[in-house]
Length: 292
Image (cartoon, rainbow, N blue to C red):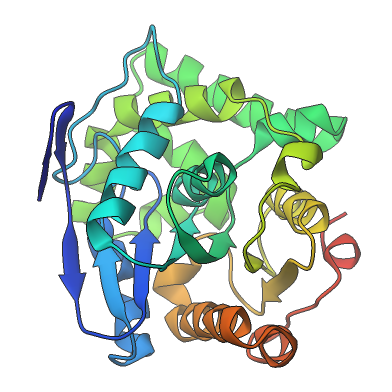
């Protein structure tokens, strides 16, 4: 645990080797990365945390100030505690926060892996109107349902990402945690829409970047992440065969291979770039070809 002046921050670490900081998404905790850590087979020192308001990490945002910069500050504290050159990997909203940390350049990163970051503001900036509207319609309906008293309104957001029936397929305790943390997730979405993001700002990221989506994921999330890969020099883009949004649980071996290959690319750029694409089933290295 990190006892920060603005509230405690969940911090755990396992194993030895190059330092890998793993950031989960919304409605989740650092424990979500356990299948991936198992697949990494002890080759890394894995540091996990939880985003604001989840797990043991205290909330420091409010409805009046839902800024994603509060998330970035928290993650920078985790990276600072981890020390040295850190390989950063973020899933879902954790991927969006990881991108912002990489753009802020206040901590040392050796590589960055982004898995299906929700980036409606980037779609809006790039005038990807149909894809942006997919996000907007989903969140408007979700918020309205919750405001009308639907305690399980979050199921529509989860099914948007994972496909119809995903929420109902989850174990009861996982569904219960999603329901419990719905107000926190709504702050996450406020962050996602509020933070302005452009290809020009993304282009300032200067570490090896691997971006991945599930081959079966929603077209809007694929397009948003494809735009990230196209904006960052030499970023790789991969579609994980058979996977959708919750890939760190359903396809941990593929995710582990993607992360490990990007770490190798940071050490040997030419060799690593080939391996990133080669190790992901159904992958491609041309963002524009996969995500329109």
